[in-house]
Length: 474
Image (cartoon, rainbow, N blue to C red):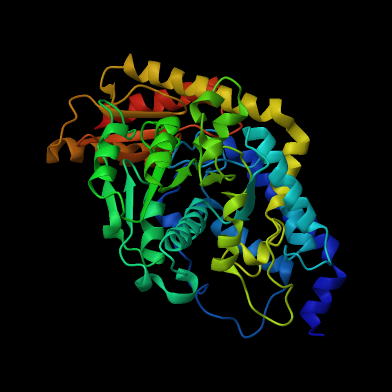
């Protein structure tokens, strides 16, 4: 064995203790750490782009990394990172994620590990948490992009089946154009259309209800009725990015019964609202959708990367047709919900289910519901404070856990956009709170998404004070 490898094997406990001490020091500084480190801290330092001929060992490498790059790590896991929809890692899920790397299981149905059984049990518990039926099968994937991709790949196969075409075998050309309808499709779904060969141009934007980002069912029916035989999938939103709008799923299900399309529900973060009895009614009807996306590294607060793709059991054979892997040394494809190898693009998969399983075991339904309800309450508080602060205005009501706001006088002019950008730069430089730029109804805006398990009222005060200071400076 190479002497450095032998040394590191002999001193492995010390290496892990050093890693633990480093992690603890990071977590202790998390509340005060910048939510957006300066650009200079995000650059690679001289020499680190070159492969060393001789190594320095694990402990020296860890020290080298942390001494050079700790200042470039943002507080994205902390209580005031409101950018994108970024969760943190609860203590239980963080500990589990460390174990995932330690035990290093390739979670497939190989009959040599309990990890596949844990994943199946985790899926079952998530269905209980979300109020979803047993007839839904679930698999862990890397994130919402891949969950949407898997769902739309199954939809593509189903649409082919309706026309007597096996797309997985014959290719998409055998079916021809597919129509995809949505009012506020997430960019990950548009990306999936490109990867699936359906094409971004297949997406048709449906009119929304007045003052909302939700689909207007009447406008959707007009499109469907004009060409009822066209192979169609409908992408519904259960929590849009800017305003957390929820499509009327019962109305869409009635249209599906009439027109026979595939209904996919993108509930990447909004689906976790179902953990709370107070907000579960927002998702009424999602249990009957053909497929569903839910992220775990957002509102469930497990470390990246983790999401779940749900499919109705009646579609499982189609899912296997799309993703089955033919090899003499692999378990043969079969229609069973724990045969993960044949249900997603990945052949090799890390033990993603364990952090979720551990979080569910540690905190239960009431613990996760409390995070949802606290985040929603704090989002309303942030919205109220901004609405009452000179210089700021809400672009939309606070529907759930996202606050979409703008600077006073925001319109579609270049001047308003430049003003928003100056404010955003000031806010990032201050590093107290991270928000992300957006636009809504042609106006340059800013959005704050609250999903972190640690966020408390004091964080809202700090965030608003920083926003006031930054606004005064522009």
